[in-house]
Length: 175
Image (cartoon, rainbow, N blue to C red; front, top):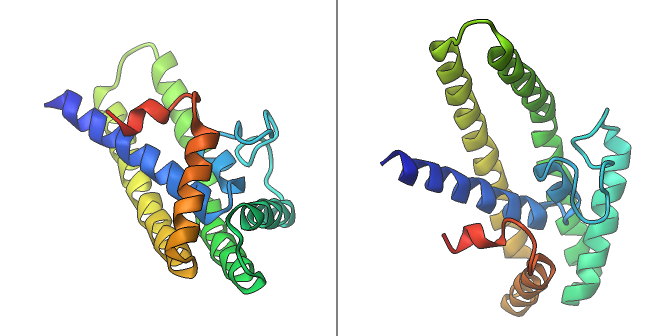
């Protein structure tokens, strides 16, 4: 049973990451993957201090790139940028919480005695945080999908599948 719970959790995280990629035009996908997405190795949204202006510029750049791939209109592009920036703004405070949780996890690991209750509290808090993020990402995904035509959504899905081909994590969607 625990194995099924883990599998569902990782599936949710993967879906959230893909949703975030759509919502924030891949720029936020770098955030979801710890700063190692789309050619920004080591300089992603999770590494170092986040400059909101730079994050917004990255979102705009990535949405513009995607807009070309799916033949989006200027109006659609503007709406997608607004949706992505809103989602990124809402999710930005979670960055510090992720860092704090990682630090707490390392402290628990390095402690002279194992505090199972503290580990469980940390796990529970992280599941709750992932649920909040997943809900916000799902909202952004739905809003983004409503902006696009069915043909554009198909092109976008194909674009993501092609970009994801052979990368780690792609197998999780099948499991």
